[in-house]
Image (cartoon, rainbow, N blue to C red; front, side):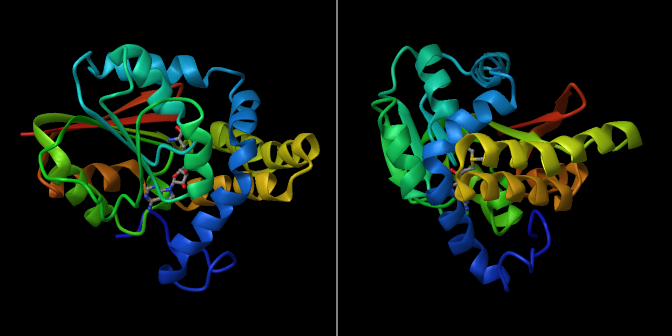
Length: 242
Ligand SMILES: C[S@@+](CC[C@H](N)C(=O)[O-])C[C@H]1O[C@@H](n2cnc3c(N)ncnc32)[C@H](O)[C@@H]1O
């Protein structure tokens, strides 16, 4: 199952999605940190750090950060692990990886979540921050996560989820669907950056409900599957490989 239906205005077929998404992040890469910095009022680093700690990342763990982007999750993980030597950062966008490489001395791998070029049973902890909407198949992705985790290994997926209620939904649409991309254009003067943020909204709007994500995690053989929600907006999906 796709995390959202094909967005025909963006790419014509499901097969064309990876190339489209790659171009989008390659073009937006150099603005990404600035844009998510002010868009979330500078809370991103503290939130990522607290969430990693809360869900059990510990010194000594070998971490795989899938869809590492510019390294915002991995950089916080390195503070907790007190080293980046045990961190593998994976992303299909060379542009995003180039920015991440400037921040930490981790292992960097060009690749996609649906076909991880990594050995079975090799990680204690796997993270994916704000990227689940970009994969082409939830089943393939979660099967791969299950495969590369060690027995007892933990999974943490961070997402922004559209609120179900009306007032929250209206404000969410106003911010993510209108103001955020427009302000991005105004401040960065980059069409690539604002397009990245318009697409961010389009995929959140079209995304499958959390129950579907939870069911797909369980169907992949993961256990202790759950979703915690912060401020009615931030989804933290967690699971364990038995
Ligand atoms: C919104 S950024 C998130 C970056 C970072 N994890 C964070 O917390 O800010 C989404 C990232 O997902 C990556 N991505 C897109 N398709 C992917 C796929 N199929 N597998 C893994 N990563 C993917 C993009 O290249 C981009 O770097």
